[in-house]
Image 1 (cartoon, rainbow, N blue to C red):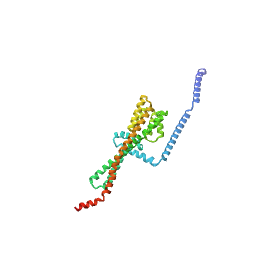
Image 2: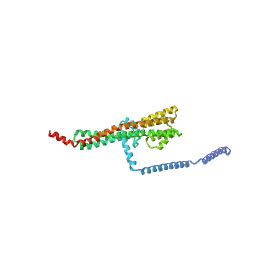
Image 3: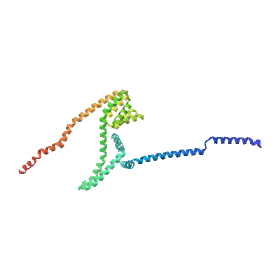
Image 4: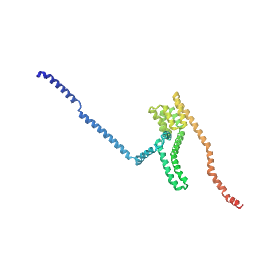
Length: 315
């Protein structure tokens, strides 16, 4: 009996020895579970610490930036959804041309228009009812106030667009001169644009920096320049970008193109200055007709008016 069961006993003992050795060499499952739990706890602890730090940083901000501005932006977005959705793209393009004043989106600006129209309606309703006596005028006053309030933000945006375009137009010749100098000195075109962006402050230098950032992120140079022309919406910038893209495609020297474009922009700036100088006398005459001549007529003809009235009265 011992001879029969001895091989089986040896096999069992070998299996048990292998299992024991494997379990001895392998880390305990409970240890791994504890380690995983500890890692998760530390990760949660770090995340909680980051959340607390972010909350503390947010609490250090003023009450207006923490509560009022986000609440106002949410209200503007809710009001903006009341307007047609097709207007959002046009408003977004206009805001980009204006330089994103107030970091507003198209939906936010539409909300501003709705809010201004509501305020204009209420103002005209209350004050029109107190000041006007004609029932028809009282009825029309709220509609006039709403229309005025609705158009006021749009006029403000148009003014921002016009101001930014004029600033870019005035700065373009000097910027091209500096680009030409940098490129002729040996800098690459992107490095020259970055140097102009670093040295100057203004909308055009910001656009140059934006172009350099897009090129470094992998956007083709021609596409980045075309985007800049769309954001500026200035004819001189568009012509400069078109010539530069064509020269880049044909392999022409960038320095030569920049030199010719800078000279052309200086000539255009001189012509615009001469045009404004030629328009100045006409504007002066209009100001004299409106403000100076009536006062002169009153001073010269004023003493003679009583005599003229007395002469006609005596007849």
